[in-house]
Amino acid sequence: MRILVSGAAGFIGSFACERLLGDGHRVVGLDNFDPFYDRPVKEANLAPSLAHGRFAFVEADIRDSAAIGEVFAAHGAFDAVVHLAARAGVRPSIRDPIGYEEVNVRGTMNLLEHAARGKNRPRFIFGSSSSVYGNSPKVPFSESDNVDRPISPYAATKKAGELVCHAYHHLYGLATCCLRFFTVYGPRQRPDLAIHKFARNILAGKPIQVFGDLAASRDYTYVDDVVLGISRAVERCDGYEIINLGSSRGVSLRDMIAAVSKACNRRPIIEQMPPQPGDVARTWADVEKAGRLLGYRPTVPFEEGIERFVEWLGRQKVGP
Image (cartoon, rainbow, N blue to C red):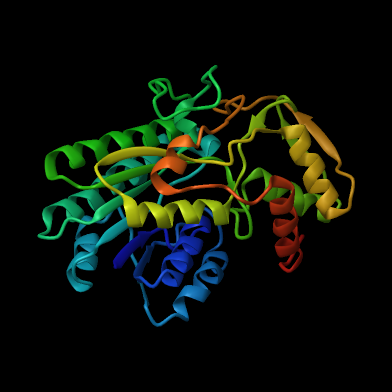
């Protein structure tokens, strides 16, 4: 298969490219190196795929419809589009909601337009988020739950992306899978995310800022498990489906800090901070549907995944 992967230089996107190449596919990676974090970090993420003979890379912005059209024209018919490019993060979306709409909604529509209007209509895999569930009191979170009450602009744009995907599926018959990712972590994790920030500061002997209740919990999902789900969706996507990709286990903030501290072999210095707007109290994935449709089974236990991440981080430059 020939597959277009947007967000190819990012955390999940770079691993997805490697997995799809390992599966024997031809992959075209697309990324604009958004300055949300340093370009050299993203270039390092991309390096293993760039060394592969079945990989091509295009630097372009998904907001630029003409540039996306050129990608589709230059590389022939795609069998699948894996759309992972996005402005990510709940708190930054509150500061820049318009920027998030431009990338996460309009950018998604640009890719859908070019996917739908060609002679060949590829499978469309959309990277959504557990944030769409908001502060749902029902756990675990199921794909059939009502998600009409997002509590951040980021969550709202991801819900909007799912709706736009459904419209294009209905109008043009695009086989579409919206994959709701649950707090993905592992090597190459974005430096703004909690596990990465906490581990880096603990290793450097610096305080960690903890916002809100230590009992707040997240369904942490190791990146290898997520990219397996993406690979299976590329192979099996049919109709229109929304599918959770999580570990089906909630880990409290307190237990997460303990696991990171243990892997770092250092005690944390905690600065307690007030809760932040847009943060949800908990996430917890029901993955029955992923198992049934994708044969998805998360295999990496949280503690083992944290150890792998800290080992990776120890090989990077830590501190100033």
